[in-house]
Structures are given as C-alpha cells and as structure tokens.
Image 1 (tube, rainbow, N blue to C red):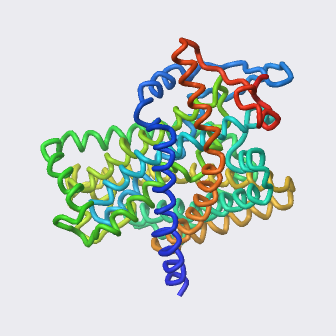
Image 2 (cartoon, one colour; image 1 turned 180 degrees about the vertical axis):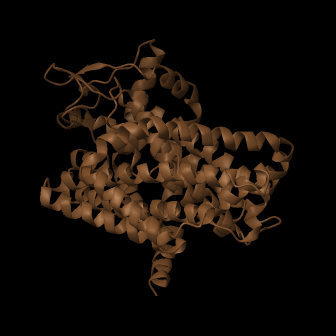
Length: 474
C-alpha cells in the first residue's frame, strides 16, 4: 500500500512537475546567459587548472579573510559527492526502466542543466557568509539574503534535510545492501544493522577519522572505477557506433527495446541524471559557497564543469558498460545490473567486477551517508541551533539507514524522488527570482576579461544588494 501511494505521488510530482520545471528553467538560463555552458568551456578549464590558489579576499571592513577551502577543493568536494551511487545504480535503474534512450536524456539534462548549475553556484558565492574557518552558504542563505523571505529559506532547509538526511540515505543504504547480497549473499538485515551502528558511531563523534580515511580512499576508488569503465569501453570500441545508434533511436521511439517508451526514457533520464549531477537541485551550492575566489562567476564556471564531468564522463561510461553487455535485457535493476554487466565484460564466470563494485559502492555510499547527514545538520542549525534537536536528528538518521537497507528498491527511489522534486522546485523558484544577479555578474566578468584583467567583484557592481553581500569588498 505504501509503495502504491509513494509511486502515485512520485508519478505526478517528479514525472511531470519536476521534469518540466527543470527543463524550462535550464532553457531559460541557457538563453539569458547566452549559452554560458557552451561558450565558456575554455575558461572553465583554465580556471580549474589555476583553482588551487588561495586568495586573501578583503571584506567590507577591509579585513582579509582567508578561507581554508580553495576553488579546486570546493570542486573536488562536489565531484566526490556526485561520483558514486548515482553513477553506478542510478544509471542502471534509468536504463532498466526507461530503456537505452534514457541515456540521451541524461545527456540533455546535463548539457542544458549546466546553465542552472552555473546560476545557483554563482548566487551561492555572491551571498555567502563567513563561518568559523571557511565561508558557508547555499540556497537557504541566498533565499534569505537575496529574496528576504525567511519562511522560504526555512522551507528549503527542511526539504534538503528530508532529502539528504533521510530519503537519499535510504538509497545509499539500499544500494550497499543490494550489492553485498548479490556478490556475497550477505543478509540484508545484518547489513542494515551494521550500517546503522556505524552511522550512529560516526555522527556521534568519530567523523574526524572517517574524514581522513575517505579523503584518501574514496578519490582512489573513484579513479579506479573510472579507469575500469573506460578500459571496458575501449575493449568494446568497435561497438560504440552501434551503442550510440541504439541510444538515439530509443530516445525518439525508433526500434524500442526493453520497454523503454519515449516518455519513460525521458522521465527516467532526467530524474536519474539530476540525482547524479545535481544541477539545479540546490545541493552543490552548499559546497560552491565555501570556495575562496575573487569573483562569484569563477566558482559558478568551475561547478558547471563538474556537471559535465559527472554525467558526460562517468555516467556515460557506466551506460556503455551496461549496453555493451546487454544485461539490461535480462530484467536486472540498480546496482545488481551494473555488477552483472561488469562481470560479463570481464569474463562472465568470475565475480571480480562484482567484488570491486561492492567494495567501491560501500565506500562511496557510506561516505555519502555521512556527508548527507551533515547537509541536514547544517541546515537544521540554520533554522535553529539547538543541540537537543540535533541529537534527535542523529538518532532518526540511524533508524532511516536501517530501514533503507531492508526496504524495496522501488520504495527507496520513490521516497527519494518525491523529496528531491520538492527541494528542486523550491530551489528553481529561488534562482528564477535571483537569476538576474548571476546574469549581471557574468556580464561584469566577461567585461573584465576583455580588458585583460583577472576579474574581481566589488559591491559597487550591484549596489542594490551591497548590504547583503558581506564577504565582498567595497
């Protein structure tokens, strides 16, 4: 009964309202920024190369505020949060339900949605505030400071807490449990207990150790997965034209396979594409705001490049593995489909691929559980800094992680889709209202580039909001 209710609500909210809103806003900002995601790719790459530099940006009081987070580190944080469950399980689910054509729509939402990613990350930089050790910000901050509506900011803070702290963590836990059940026949109930206990131990005091561990291991596993994916693609290079033809034909209803009707392929491609690249969702701006740069547009451009890296690179590699193996025709779904596809490409009878994916997904998904928890805690503290409230939230996250591991795949994705849609719609409405500032900033940035300057932002550029942009000099 719960699955039917969740499916019905998700069907209306995500399949129609969110998909249409995402595409409409993405097209709007592509037009208003004159295709910033296309015409400034070279500048994005140049900035990324130079983004390890730390700047001492003076605030309105003339004090130099040195952030502990460089532009590249903020980019790396957002990439680390993106590469994982969405790339491995999300892509598989999209293909299993929506057919090969879903991959085309994942590309489209990444290419168009990159404009929305640019706007939201630029706004996060513009309205960021000074924290104890680094800048902080995100949609809740730019809604309150830019629009002046506390209730709207609090609504977003609640929605991102529900989405990341609860709904997305059920997906992460379910993915780990499914991977280990498939590869090692490990009981889901035992994995649920292990994940819940580990989560509670860490969020109640052990975050420093897991942070040091994940800083080293997770990037290594991400690189290893990307290399494995591309080795498999290279081994099947002769089939690439065939796979591309399959994707395009299915995207537009020619020679449909695996039940992937055009509408379902589009819906699944957009939904799973958003889950993976987060463009327009409102989560990435939280990382973008922490960077120390001389102009908000710099981090906006770098975060735009992150969307391309996630979807056009990593998600595409996973999609090609699955489509090369033809495993999507055998009724598998989620992380199990990716595991079986890799096993098939590495020799069939051996489970080396499944073992590697199981280890990788545990590291990716578990560190995501902790990161998702902190998204929630940060936004709860934005609403009300109350330690009792935080303790209750921590216990609730532990319970949710347990439930996510034992729930069905459809149910956890259904909950995630609903909360993700509500959060995304809330953020899209905000960036439509505030997007004019990002357009002004882009114009200012390009003007300074033409003059041969290293662009710097000053409050006088947009005097109407000078009082709300406390981290930028006069």
